Image (cartoon, rainbow over all chains, first blue to last red; front, top):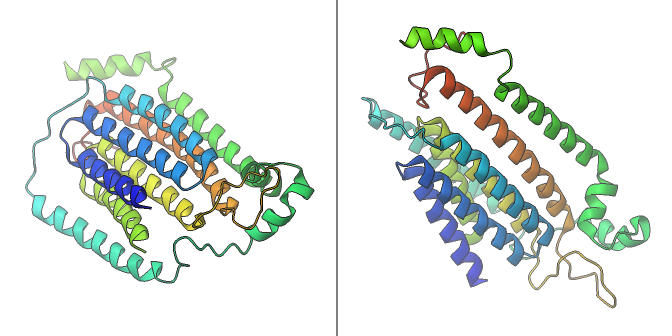
Length: 182
Length: 112
């Protein structure tokens, strides 16, 4: 289990670098390192389907983020309320950590899951669905409406992205903005 | 229990980034980090010591398999996370086109 702790500490260091570094492209690359570390953690925790999905999604998210940050790296000047903003953020995060640490003591011990629902899936998954991979039998058979909802959210988001990035019918507006800038 | 705490620390880093940073791309990065931490937490609760991946084979006992239900939920959540990230990045790019900056304190005219 020691490799799990090493990978988690690596991910935490990567996340700190990602939020503190000034260069936006370096920040995005650090997030990519965190995501690939997460993919290896999934493999160690015996979740191969999730690890493959995480790998693919991580690469796609990295491409999208790099497309947004290329050649748009602007310097930021610090403003006056630096201390107040940091104090409020730290108080909020501290409250969250305190409450969450109290909450995780009620969870079952790590390595011994409760498995109240999944016991039925493990015992009757093969006779009821005929799928040898239990994860695919859960997402495509026992909880197929969940997957339908996922597809709905996915297509709604794609329609939103296409509406936002399309160029047709926006030329006039762009011209007026340019004139105002000049 | 320490491993759950490390997972919570990862979530708290993302939360701090969302609360504190002014750059829109940095806020998106914070949201992505929190999302990773939440997915990791689900998979951690599903793990069984000495367990196997939930795939049937010939002559394999089913009593030591890990919990397949959180795996299915996280599989759904990862794909939805990609879609919402793409939507956020598209909005950020439109904001950059209109205002020429990623700084949220400089964007005053939000009435269109």
